[in-house]
Image (cartoon, rainbow, N blue to C red; front, side):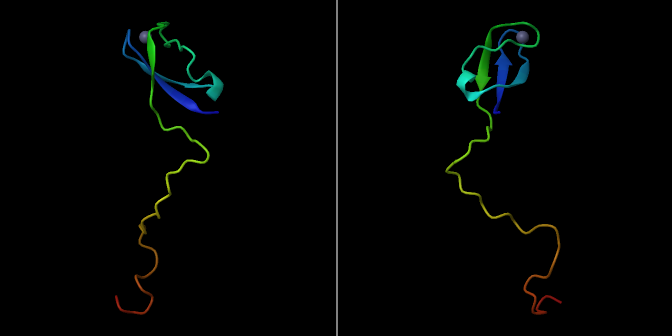
Amino acid sequence: MPRYDFRCRSCGATFELNRPMARANDPATCPEGHADTVKLLSTVAVTGAKASAAPAPSGGGGGGCCGGGCCG
Ligand SMILES: [Zn+2]
């Protein structure tokens, strides 16, 4: 279930809610009880996103650079 971030405009608190996408735009109530909240753009795991996963940088210091003994 996607998680949405909200911010209360009454007290400035931010909070998160887990709710179905069908109810993403439903009004949310701040933990303090305020109803004047806005939904923030957050990183929601969406299946089928176009963003291509960049290859992870080889960090960690495991293995040689070429395996041919050039760096040793
Ligand atoms: Zn509030």
